[in-house]
Amino acid sequence: MSDKLDLLDEVDSVINPKKMLDVNHLIYVLLSVLLVIVVLFPKIYIQQQIYFMSRDISKLKGEYDTLKEENRLISSSVESIRYKNQILDTLF
Image (cartoon, rainbow, N blue to C red; front, top):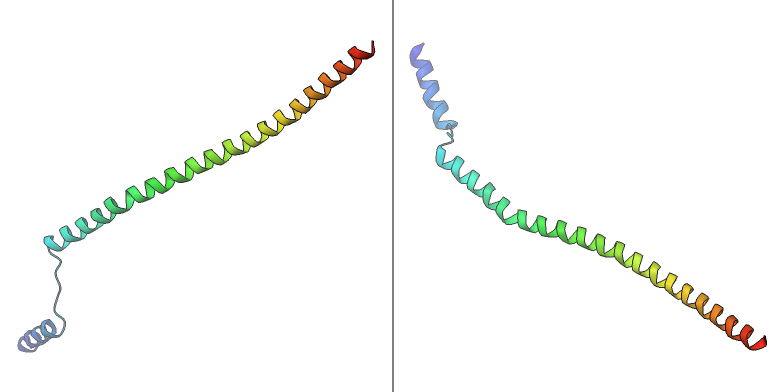
């Protein structure tokens, strides 16, 4: 019986060899992951900073447009009041 088991073990080891993971393989995987992180992190960080800056710029552009329109309305109002004052001063 023991001979059969030994023979089956040997045949099994030939048919299905056991793949052992060694320290070198682990180091290669960790270095690969570290390399990917080192390459991708700056790209992600820069894209995120560009997104936040563009969002701030868009907000400021909206406020600028609003203030510009308010300035135009106030200028026309001042011009209207100035015109009325000049007309009223000449009548009286």
